[in-house]
Image (tube, rainbow, N blue to C red; front, side, top):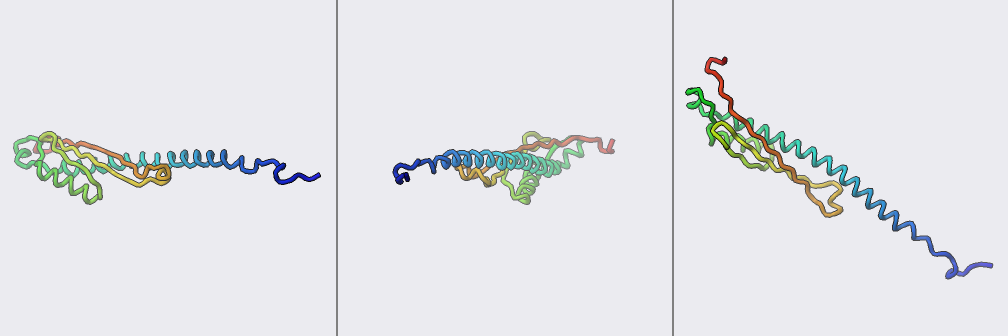
Length: 142
């Protein structure tokens, strides 16, 4: 006795729904792993660029203050040096002279995602900041 097509069991597509869900979960986990690692890397890069820009700005000392034995920045030159470093690095950021002897740099980096774009997250944003202090030293180098 043969079965007609209506009598046959219809289970051929039952595996596709769980498999689709499993594949979506695998892509989501992979996206979190890959793009999460890229985010951590980007945070470290933002901090490093901010540190270097602050150091560049910290080199712009006020020579008149140094002659008096004080530690102070030339505010305009310090901001310009830090911004120049940021520009050379291709990064956007803000520069603040927060005290006569201290400069602060805040950096924002944006990078496209690899896999999270599939779920609507198209960009990773990371910020970093750093400060540099001018430290007084004796004129004779002691």
